[in-house]
Length: 176
Image (cartoon, rainbow, N blue to C red; front, side, top):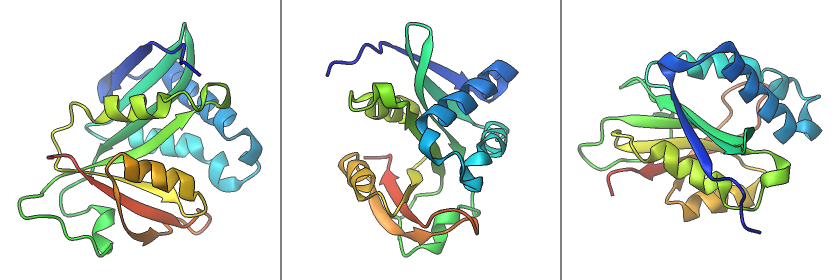
């Protein structure tokens, strides 16, 4: 199916409004409608506030006309405090900075059109960090395989919150 989405809009830490925050929450509620009884998913607004409040936060939103259909966002991690370092991954010499991709999601109606790949690549296109890192629920091997196609390698597993899933820690070299 060919995508009708042609508009990707970029947002940064300093240009976020309450309407922007609510739009992210609404897209998440649609994307995870079947899981909204899960307390972890109910806390999504907290994650939006946490990530969007970080220096260097960036977000790309895909639109079909004026309707938001998905987004990808993240922020640089503080040097020396990168949570992925608890894994067995050994970066090459000279790798000092990490960009964490926190979310990549597309609403159900627009899935399987390549939108997530476009969002992801647009998010990382201008990044100057050495590595990108993200988490993938280990019960979703197809999603993990997709990220592997995008250049990520699995470095380990983590459960960042007591009520969160166990995630595969995926790392991608941004310098190659």
